[in-house]
Image 1 (cartoon, rainbow, N blue to C red):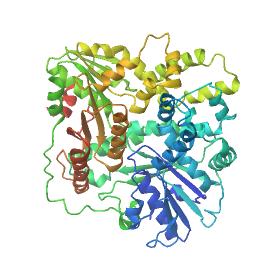
Image 2 (cartoon, helix red, strand yellow):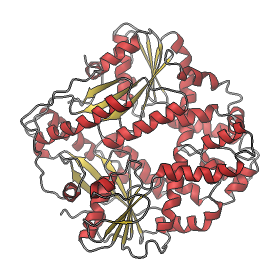
Image 3 (cartoon, helix red, strand yellow):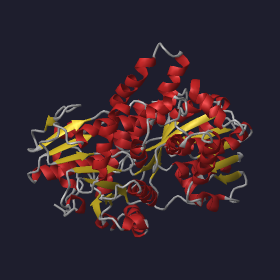
Amino acid sequence: MMNMKFLDQSPRFLFFTGKGGVGKTSIACATAIQLADAGRRVLLVSTDPASNVGQVFGISIGNSITVIPAVPNLAALEIDPQAAAQAYRDRIVGPVRGVLPDGVVQGIEEQLSGACTTEIAAFDEFTALLTESVLTVDYDHIIFDTAPTGHTIRLLQLPGAWSGFLEQGKGDASCLGPLSGLEKQREQYKAAVDALADAARTRLILVARAQQATLREVARTHDELAAIGLVQQYLVINGILPRIEAENDPLAAAIHEREQSALNAIPDVLQQLPCDQVMLKPFNLVGLAALRQLLVDTPSQAQGTADSAIKLDTPSLSELIDGIAQDGRGLVMLMGKGGVGKTTLAAAVAVELARRGLPVHLTTSDPAAHLSETLSGTLANLTVSRIDPHAETERYRQHVLQTKGANLDAQGRALLEEDLRSPCTEEIAVFQAFSRVIREAGKKFVVMDTAPTGHTLLLLDATGAYHREISRQMGDTGLHYTTPLMRLQDPKLTKVLVVTLAETTPILEAANLQADLRRAGIEPWAWVINNSVAATIVSSPLLRQRAANELREIDAVANQYAQRYAVVPLLHQEPVGVSRLLELAGR
């Protein structure tokens, strides 16, 4: 076994946090097994909506503490966050159903359908485990495979009566709504948040990949959590390609160089943290044998595919663009979780459409602004505009505080300010900025590299009190949201491309996003699987095995989820500049 710093003198509670697809659940499971093998009594708590913990251990687990026979000293519990959120919604909406008008009830239900509600409801379940209950008295360690965000914890720390705030009509906002069911648990929440902030009891492990964008995101998470007192943080960088794989394979060498460059440029705040590196493994992390090897520092040779090339016959991005180009104009929106490559693929779509002689406006919220720098003036039919998400969000926040917040007391203003820190706020603010160029889509192609989720769009268009509140907030901007939503619902006017990776968690997240959009009446036009190893040629045994592992995920997209799809290969070089973007499109 490696000497992992994050396991040194482990406190009672270990929380793993990070974006989807970085390996939180695998590392949490491997940690639980290692501590149990060392004779500690361990409870592993999973909140993965498609938890494979039961599959890993070969038994059915579910929402009750279940002993794992194959691993002495280990028990597991699966919290289904969607089921928890539904029970939570029922508790809040049940008493007003049939009492308030249907439109108002629908508005409340939509407020309670976002990520905030799911996270708060899951944390609601955590609290019993964090507050020294009889449930957990027998365990030395409790390991959580996910952690609440700093935003959620701040919401739980806020003083004052949330329910009273809502009942008095002072706010009907995206994250305050979910809090209305929490009044009775206030003391238990305070104890749970205190436990999280106590370094003697709790350790937060930030899980990342060796990618610059991912590490920047983790640095933001670190700052957000440290600002509210959760300072006992460790960093685990997962899935690093071993140097030996790069020796005779140009793609592996390029990946290795990119990863090392990202590690050398790690943000300053992360350099101060105890850090562990976990090497990329060739196998899927399912089953005890695989998980016992995850934290082992011995090279694991790939098996079975080293002598046979993967023959992948899937549509290219260029073939999808054929269908988009037929209409001659329209809005193309790329959507997906962070880190899947939306910005780069938006640029690839725009460049390929422009290459075909079609007029294109690419509007991007790319924080690095490298698109504007590398594309401006390089293609006759392409214009590029950049939106600064931070500036737009701050402008929006100030507008709401000066209007809606003007007459609130200190407590009400504190609640409003916290609500304006929610992810929804940035989505609304950026979409507001994007909407300035959407009208151009009647005359040319407008390609957007990010877009609000279906939940946010419904909030923008909701009936009842929330809609009236948004209308008041937006009153002097001249923006109307009904028309944009109708435009987005019309596939002749708008084509939504859902971007994902050929890995289990990103595909699950993309499927959840698709369900979210469908609830808003928007049917994704296509899926794009980005950075596929199976779609390129490799000689590294480890990468060949990874390519073979992708095939099941690509098949799921093709046959279960997508009306149409494309697979984009992982390139040797970063796809910056016109020629490399055209290479992404399959040129």
